[in-house]
Structures are given as structure tokens and as C-alpha cells.
Length: 163
Image 1 (tube, rainbow, N blue to C red):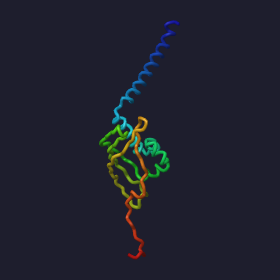
Image 2 (image 1 turned 90 degrees about the vertical axis):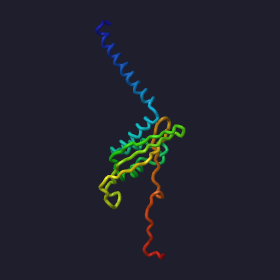
Image 3 (image 1 turned 180 degrees about the vertical axis):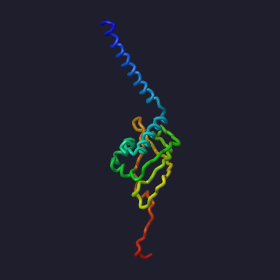
Image 4 (image 1 turned 120 degrees about the vertical axis):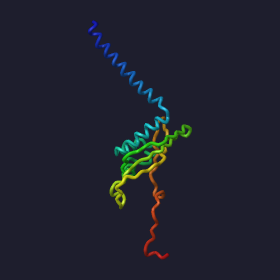
């Protein structure tokens, strides 16, 4: 091989190894992330999906047991009543002995028109502690669908009932 024939082969080899090392560097950084950083990354991905109205992406971040118990269509029905406008992560606590993390998240949301009989035009704010679980080295949001007995509805007495 002449010098002119070897030069392109050498350049291709150098580019190949540069790309290989760059990708390995990305893997190294991901595996050396602290548990809190890894959890924060997943929390951001989840809430970004909610803000961007991407329930499919948010659903993928639910804990595997929750996904077995609740299908995507059901999850979408339960989360479609409001649109998330923004969020802010306040605090992250990780308990590796229990494979759990708690994340305090404040989010601003708007109830979609027609969801309830009155119109609430202003955004509402809510702060809650989200529970996350570590499954096979990956963080997932704990989710259980709301139960009817957890909703405080006013008790209405029939008008013709004697007291």
C-alpha cells in the first residue's frame, strides 16, 4: 500500500476509535452517577413527559408492578383530567436499603374544561412527596390508581327519606 492508500484507512481508524471512546465515556458517566442524580434524571424525564402531554412516556416510567395492574389506556384516563404546566423539584431522599426514593415535587396544573361542572380558569399548585422505587438498577415512579373510597364526596340524603 502506498502512503495515499494508507492515509484514508488511518483516518477512518482514528475516527472509529474516537467515537468508541466517546461512547464509552458516556457509559462511564451514567454508571458513576450517584443514586440521587440518577433519580433526579428519571424524575425530570417523568415530569417533562407530563408537561409535554406525553402520557406514553410518563407511563413507561411507572413501576413495573403498576404497569401490570394498570394499562396505558386506564392510566391516560386517570391523568387526563388536568394539564401540567410546570414543576419544580424541591427535595430528593434516597433509601438504598429499602430501594426507595422520595421526591418532593411542586407542580402547577390546570383542570381541563369539562372535567368538573365548574370552570376553574386559573392554574393551581400542588406539592407532594412522590415515591420512587429502584428495580433492577433503574428508578420507577410508584403509582396506584385512585380508589373511590379515597375521594371525599359529600353524602347526599334522598329528599323523600325520613330523618
